[in-house]
Image 1 (spheres, rainbow over the protein chains, first blue to last red):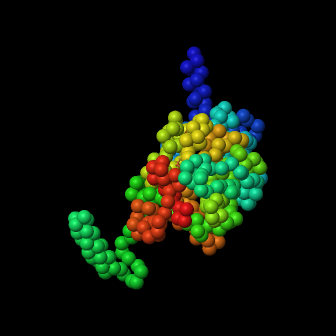
Image 2 (image 1 turned 90 degrees about the vertical axis):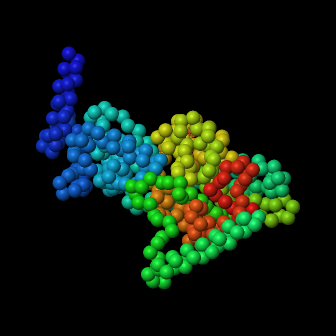
Image 3 (image 1 turned 45 degrees about the horizontal axis):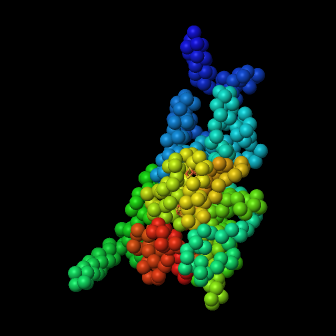
Length: 166
Length: 248
Ligand code: SF4
Ligand code: SF4
């Protein structure tokens, strides 16, 4: 029984996902379906996203996860599946554009609908940053704790003292 | 001894010939058909053919100058809370004075990108790791924030993020509950650029920092290492650091 319910729910969701734009238009008319913001660009003339849209909706996390390890550990920086490029294309860089905390943010529009909680944006930028930010180091105060290495080396500790360390 | 001398003579002759041969291949003055080190393309993994290193000349490092620190903070969006004990710090200036002579010198201290990094040895999760090209990083997806690495690092190079962060930069993801340290500006290095601190030091004409591939005998850093004496801080620990100092 439960299986049947789950199945029909899945079919419904898939149908909703496949219905694409008309569903979104319909959704904005007061339905509970997510309103997914439009991407800023197309991947190619024939394809909207980096893989067919249905594939991306279902499996985007697999692509991002794979790319994550390749980038962090092997220095591979191709752009097709990089989270940074997802954000560059799917999120506006306007200062007042919705952030991840809003249902109007591309990622959260679906995650909030599907009750998926992610922690990507606790660390990663949830919007494109195309120009360098303001001078950010002003909040840095000076520290006076000494680096262990310099004071720990016996002959150095005898002859040399650390007089400033910030 | 004689053997060594023979080999050296042979080597010199061989290198001499190679240089002539290579020169013969130049299409125009200064333009060669062969490049010694080829830049890596975005889809190629890093290899141990390269080992990134840094040479810091403390004689050129200006007393009171903080340009490398500022550049690092700006590059990675490191903001402080005015709490120096816990604020993230990837590079810092240290001033030293010889007690006998009163001679003072100043140097930047950062993650030394050890070949045998204690931080990696102690990490229980595998989050601390050394890339094949020698850059030591924290995979923050895996880090559980236990801070063993902070205790193990002899250079006090690592920081723990205690508070929620906002507005991180796309190339520098950082977040609460994880440990971080100098990445040698890995995002820049992967794009063929030099670290932000080195760029800032050079831009201010101090030229106290050189960055490059210490496996490539033709690189600027290798040439300088060959020519001048340099030291590792705490060389006694045998970590074979990627960061070397001149003048200490
Ligand atoms: S300097 Fe410290 S953080 Fe950097 S590689 Fe060595 S032990 Fe690890
Ligand atoms: S704090 Fe993170 S990187 Fe450091 S030892 Fe613990 S798990 Fe490893």
